[in-house]
Amino acid sequence: MAEAQVIRLRGGDLRGEANTSAGSVGQPVDSAAAEANLSRDQPGGDRPASSWERKAAAGLAFLRRRITGQYEVDEFGFDPELTESAVLPAMRQLYHTWFRTEVIGVHNIPADSGALIVANHAGALWALDGVMAATAVHEETPDHRFLRMLGADLLFTTPVLGSLARKTGSTLACNPDAERLLSIGELVGVWPEGFKGIGKPFNERYKLQRFGRGGFVSAALRTGAPIIPTSIVGSEEIHPMLGNAKTLARVLGLPYFPLTPTFPWLGPLGMIPLPSKWYIEFGDPIETAQYGPEAADDPMLVFELTDRVREQIQGNLYRLLMQRRSIWR
Image (cartoon, rainbow, N blue to C red; front, side):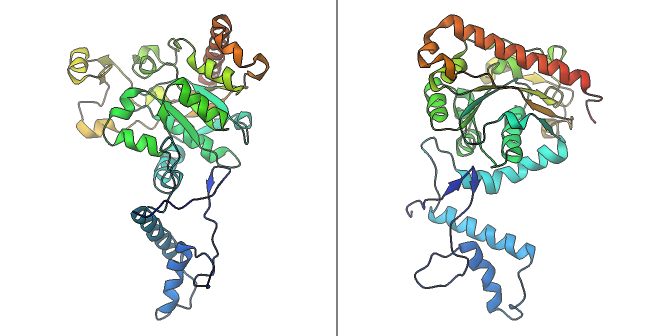
């Protein structure tokens, strides 16, 4: 396995710094450009490469780097090239076409510093709100920033899914990891409702569950990062949870087993999310820098800020629901 090639990241966007004139002696070669230039050696190769040919050349260059190990991951296992090239294209289809997502308040996300994005949680079968929030951050911020999501232990012990979560920037929902990411200027996403949020029945939709002990507030206080309360509408309707097969959940070692109008009755087809209309609002930031790192040890302040974040998310949810004309349009 070749040593990982250092890839320069600028503003969260992946751009390989290379000379586009392939074959120059003593100069770096852009492998994607080299693939595209191969067509010039073939009959009729003097014509400009088509869009399809450029995409094919870029795909071949991507595969070559994966096979030879010429790519970079950070200390958490985040692989920005894989995320940008292989995962985000599929997520964009869900984001733009299936859920028709509208984003409000993207200006509240810092352009080049750390912040803690705290959102409501739902989904029953698939917690897609985290994925869509990460896609919204990357799509809508000027420098296409990445959202580093904090996930539960169960996510990282699930075969395939756990490895993919690591490679796309997620890490364990614990204060040390959150603080390290915030201290180096990353955007960190947390869903404090946890399984209580994604596993709540449909008749309690958009009613926030408890936010735990406010560990996310402590992480923000220790690093001085602002907290951005984020409200997501649409995620409750993708798999309306009508019941919970508790016995089956215990047997399978799951926190709950959802019964929805389509799952498990339709088999794999029942796992397809319904095409609800989504809104994501990044609310006004709650600043923490003025309190100082020592404030993280003040339980009353932590509780007060936790409650303030929760109330702001809940209030924005109610307002968005009042403005929404239809679940589907």
